[in-house]
Length: 223
Image (cartoon, rainbow, N blue to C red; front, side, top):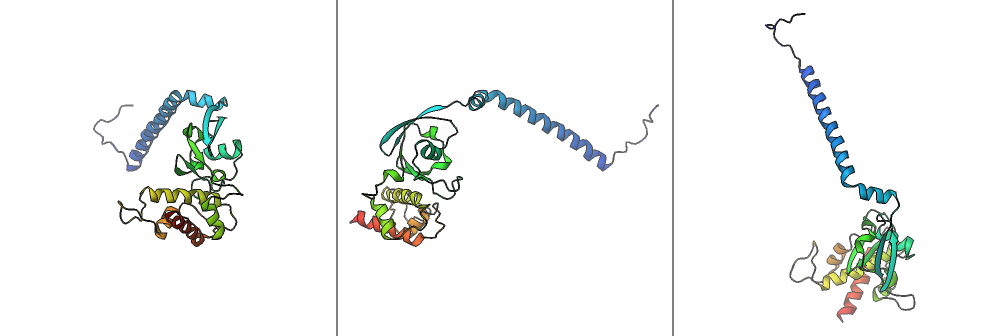
């Protein structure tokens, strides 16, 4: 059938939108296929390693003692401590880096052990609550927590104590926080302590006692 070339083209707004949607869908689909293909080509080794259950050697110095482990590369430092080294003092709370119960000290800095992989700390020194003191000879921070009744259920306490120990070191080293007034001279204050300890949650709300315990240790060190 011959078309009348002189007849005007009648395309509605709906027809235009349908045509545009079809083109966009085709482009997105093609892009996703290409991305999946590229990803599969760039990560074949990692995928096959995980699928095959490959482990990697990891050497850690835990509380002054050298430990050699063979770990799945996806193992967090928290799980390595608890499940492989049986150091259960470090607690698994939220497992999302929001509560601070898993705080340990790595190379002098406090970190959430649930947010980092053990293989990332190969050759590094890790201090856990077990390395701070013993029941027979408590660390000053542990003694202060007992003296000031700075815990109730105790689940968050190992992380609180590790964090508090590192907080005093941060202040001594002149590392500022968001509430530091003079960045060149960091001074101890309850406000500094509360800000720096804000990542450690205590569901029992023993915060005033925790601050008092940290203040007591700081004054003892100063004396």
